[in-house]
Length: 484
Image 1 (tube, rainbow, N blue to C red):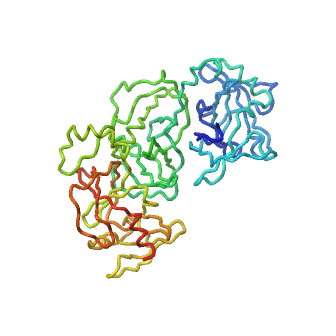
Image 2: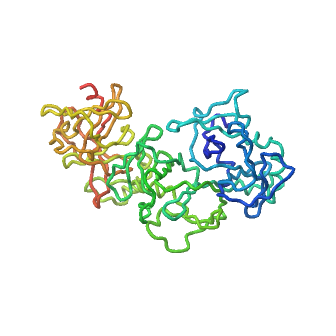
Image 3: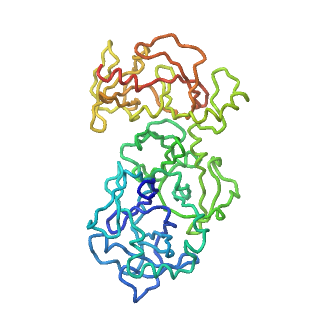
């Protein structure tokens, strides 16, 4: 049911309007210019026909109908063409460019009442973080335009009804990283968009840059080229894009240089890597020929998610444990209990907290109000996203020495409570780990003030060494100090 199911949408722009098109009907995005064959007797919204490989199809211009009532563009070069597969056949929509890919939940889709502007749309799509709503294109209404369905049916290739082969082709999102194109299955992408303005490049890590908030969670951001072991991006941070990849409860965001488009590829079109690949080949699963003829490298979503520490069929081992077959035999049962943790350091102690407990991971702003005193863990206050944040030195709360030198590089772990936001200052926050918590091999009988005894731990791999990290519940700690 389209009104209750989650939709994967490709967002494009044409006529000054953002359009949302279900990826299930998107064949690919083609960059212009295209050679058009004029159709003298066609209505004004059909600019002509163009050839794409072994097929010909009409190019439809919707600008005059959705961009304020202006006249459709004259036949000629189109910046981009969105190729759609419909029950009538293939057709191309003239667009200005592709904006992003997003998953839309039912509560983000609104039905347009009868009489609303735009006869080509029956619904709108609005999502937190996007500056404006997108119009959800109704393909049936596009086909109902004069001459469109008839012109699409004249193509050389078979239609969706003619064969089931076309339905076996899966949509892939094509991204650019450095001078190479890469592809990810659209079903694994929650969102592909420009870098958010509040992205914190916090982590000192070979490929992890920082975090950004998405759908109420903090998701780690990885530089795709660095993850692959290839030279860094030439694009400035302001012009880079994020691709949120997820399967199950695991998520990771890739920073890329550009979102190139969407292509639909049959399984028979995929090829194994036939030549040595530089860098980390473990996250590459194959290659295919893109619509421009150039090879596109396919990324393995499972392997990419594994870069944050998720080891399939493997479980963390306890300190001093052998990690032998007995623990591996139980790994499958415990792997589902894994969570994403942020490991951080306080006065030489390594701790970890789940990303779900954090509302933001930031740097200490330079204009924070300093309220430090020897008798209190309270460091001061600052403002983030228009809200006040009470800052506490986590080391002092744990009975450890305070942070000596506060600077704009000091990490701040923020947690929302019913009484407001609390930020904990730590020495470093630079390791992400996906792991299943395990009981501590001993009981820590020190009370650490208001903090409960540590009862669980995870194994943290990073900085060239393997070590244990005690799990601390920052959400509970924040509630205790929200009004203190």
